[in-house]
Length: 243
Image (cartoon, rainbow, N blue to C red; front, top):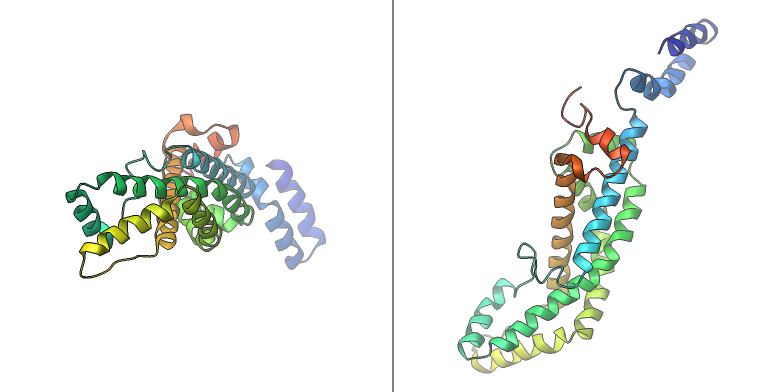
């Protein structure tokens, strides 16, 4: 720190105020580090690393077999408008048909989850220092909300064709059609919701739910900070609300 002050003293003697201001801005992150605070660069790098870890873990967990289907928090069930359909068919002894439809849409979501990580990583690369500072001192889900704002549109665009392909691959479209065609034989009001749009939305909700859990781990649990940089950034006074 003394060297920085000496350097600035010399600079001020030979430069104008405007030039000095620019130099101060350049040296500011290093001065902060010398005082025991995190530099802006460390914060940005730490937040990017945390988001990358969370994104990779979330995508890996949810794209695994039963990543959606056996996770009660995000398992995709029939949409609200189809719950009457489900009850009617189960009452008619057709539970197996409904169960196959539910399993197949969750398999489609698991298939689509594989494409989430690269989209997250692309968004993380564009994070600015200002973004990082806001996330570090933001609420418990500031990083997740940042990714939502940056990637929801891209995820929807990327997920929908994958979901549609997956729905066909796991016979979800067939099971779904069977469910509603069977129901419609007995119903006055016919129902046929947009399956791909519904599953796409639920798959994206599930991804962000998992990312939020990963964010909480890194924020709250020192064991989850798997690199020295994560330990330094999230163990700092700034991350804990200190100045």
